[in-house]
Amino acid sequence: MGLKKGDEYLKSIKSLGLKAHVLGEKAENLPEHGLVEPAQKAVAFTYDAAQDKETRDLFCVESALCKDVVNRFSHLHQSTDDLVNKVKMQRYCGIQTGCCFQRCVGLDAANAIFSTTYECDQKHATDYHERFKDYWRWIQQDDLVVDGAMTDPKGDRSKRPIEQSDPDLFLRIKEQRPDGIIISGAKLHQTGMLNSHEILIMPTLTMRPGEEPWAVCCAVPTNARGIHYIYGRQSSDTRKLETYHLDVGNPVYGGQEVMTVFDDVYVPNERVFMNGEVDFSGVLVERFASYHRQSYGGCKTEVGDVLIGATALIAKMNGVDKASHINDKIVEMIHLNETIYACGIACSTTGEQTSAGNFQVNMLLANVCKLNVTRFPYELARLATDVAGGLLGTMPAAAELEDPLAGKYIQKYLSANTQYKTVDRMKVLRLIENLVVGAGAVGYLIESMHGAGPPAAQRIMIRRQAQIEEKIDQVKAFLSIK
Ligand code: SF4
Ligand code: FE
Image 1 (cartoon, helix red, strand yellow):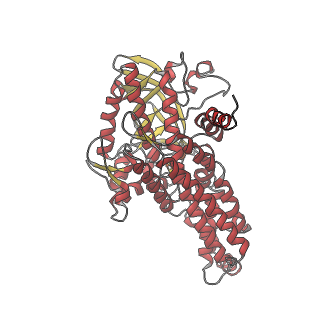
Image 2 (cartoon, helix red, strand yellow):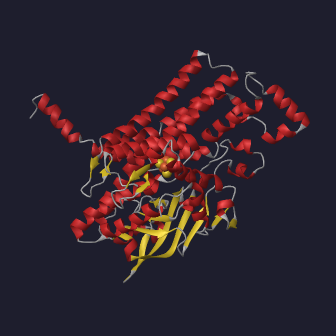
Image 3 (cartoon, helix red, strand yellow):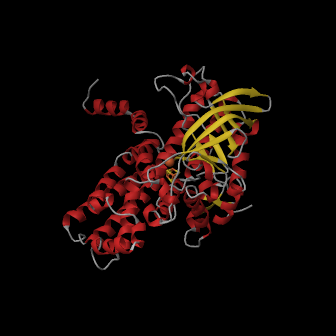
């Protein structure tokens, strides 16, 4: 099949005929729905970038699995250079789209499943690794988008999956059949689900003996029978449906979130990559989470780039760009943003080869990266709000520009540095608003906190990876303490 172009990808998604519950209605033609279209365009960008002669060297790579040139978004990393290039590619995508481009989750899931299935087969004499290789070869050759689905609803957080009032609160195997399994449950916070061809399902936490039905990893098509999609609401989301696009902030692209329900979905054996091996559930969760925490070192810094650029521009438009305290704030934003990126690069360059042959990020540094992401974008948003000024929250609607009276007054009283048009100043303010309190803030702030796991999850991993006992022993030796 080879590499698809953006419009070929869009056609292929349309042909799946996905339906979703959107704002209380059953939407059938999703690719043309005003809410869905901007998010789909963001994924299409990852295809077009692989065709663009300026960027194809970064986006295209030879696959060790199928030997063809594939999109890096489906690549199994063969070196630390591959890990670094992944982060660079993510940063590039983000500065172009200003939102989540969704394709990294499947990439991160694939790399984690590739190494975990190999080790599981060694121990349990299963054949998941070969199954997965066959599956992923097809994904690479057909240049498909895969949604990695990990987060279960989790119900009462004080209870294990087996103790919940409803066993479906953690996605589970409901029935074993000779030729496959039936799964039941839901996955929340699925950004790219409606823009994907396939779903890779993973357990949400380390399962224990007795919790075998919840230790499941498998793949299903997004249009499989029994799957239902319920669209998430985001602040200011319906601005995307209005005539005056200026008020959206991000003119072309945008994010979305979807609750996905698996109501007795059949999965054939060849698409099952874990079926009750509880001892590998935690390995898979930790590896996937670490890859995705590395991903944030690229994708969140790029949205930071957009916010920094917009903040520096609005400072010029407001006529305050020469003020030293404004410059200090912009430098602070850059410092915080590049600190995140540095962690994304560092956990990539210090990654290591797995026994399956692909490369895994340095888990300690990937978790440090993501822990910074749970804080720094909030500080960037605070500084951008400070520099932009109060108009960020009080500016009239773009539609008023059409009114002879209101339009005249807006042009007159929202004019600042006369080198810039009032309407352009409004565009920049709406972009900043989008990222700090509007629909874009879901991807930039809420997702920075909770995506790839909340800060508490990173703290646990940091504690586990930091080899504290070794440090204690070193100090004891240094001080000659027995
Ligand atoms: Fe990729 Fe970032 Fe979106 Fe995750 S949140 S899919 S890493 S762009
Ligand atoms: Fe995410």
